[in-house]
Length: 332
Image 1: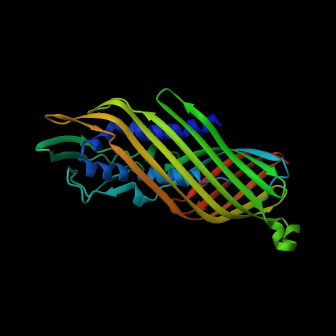
Image 2 (image 1 turned 30 degrees about the horizontal axis):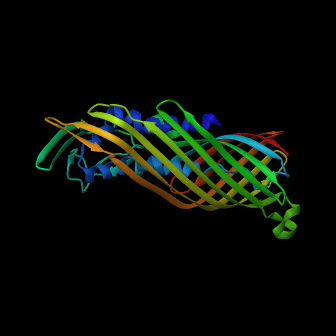
Image 3 (image 1 turned 30 degrees about the vertical axis):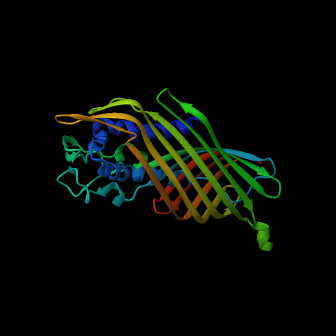
């Protein structure tokens, strides 16, 4: 399961580090009110996309395993950011000027990097700077979508229950580490519908929860000198769904309706010395952003059974439409 968190960390590092090298740090140069708005608007699509992706891919059938039967699946979930969330409005900002009414979010194009000027007065000192606003990472993401890999164990229990586990201890490198825990429970209720239990149709209820934490060490970049810099990312997401499937010997068609929600925080801690045209200043703990996402969802998918090997894929309609593709080894 280590690869799960390592791939996520790769995306997270791309968000915090790669963009810092070509302009992300410029938004820290703005005054406090504008800085908060800019960082929140710039990173919001990625944080929402991660919540939606982490809530995806919990099942590929409504049928539960026999007691102590199990499967191990490896999958990829991606959430597509709507076009309107690839840009954000610059109205209401007072300390910056790009000559444009909108700028790219992190989900936007990497080529959207307008020249930006900073100019504001604080404590009778005027601060001025010029930088290229950061573009997005759209072209660097798989399928231009926010990814979340998933390695999952599903275990059958008595009374037609099944539990699912996603667990990664803290792993990573010297400058970025993360851990993940996810738990799901599925209860098959096909027998509640009388004769339906004698058909290929299966019906279940599902609930799942995921929490993830990543710590990323921030180093000097461009106009910023950092002391004790660290970014802390925390995500919590949950989903509840009613799911059904038609299980045949080779082909399984499945779907579900339900609700998913979550929240995440991004904190940038430490002391940051910012260099302007004629002077510098130091700010501490510059970012404390909160994000949330929620909404109803509808999923349709199919699974191909090749003995103990299963290949599956699904598509989910919601605010950020999501796709899931994976393989599983299933016993009983």
